[in-house]
Length: 178
Image (cartoon, rainbow, N blue to C red; front, side, top):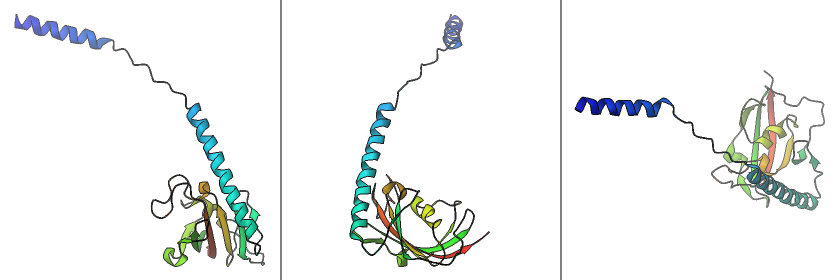
């Protein structure tokens, strides 16, 4: 009798597992969430652009250029010689400081020290990666970086918060070609 019960349980188990019915995927469209995110980002970018336009208007000592990368910059020291700019694969050495939009130093160049970076081959703050390619050795450039070109949504998890536009001053010290 016990054997028949085990055979019956085994048979029922076999039948129930023989044709498992797949679950239907849960389908969600992200269009509502995505459009809200796009609208929020456009609003944030417009707000940051207005902040930078006010900074540019107040700074009568400099002429700011609108880069094709999506930020503004001005030369504090400009190299007039026809010397090369960094290209992909070059190793550059530079110093920089990071300020908030009020001009208060967040990270000083002394605190950060000299940085070495392989152009377009290492991860670094996007605005700095793009800005360095506009520079020559011995130039000192002030970059007005919207948050999307700085640390974006995440911040640096130390001193720079989420969606924080920055003012970054870079001095390009050396370019090594590889």
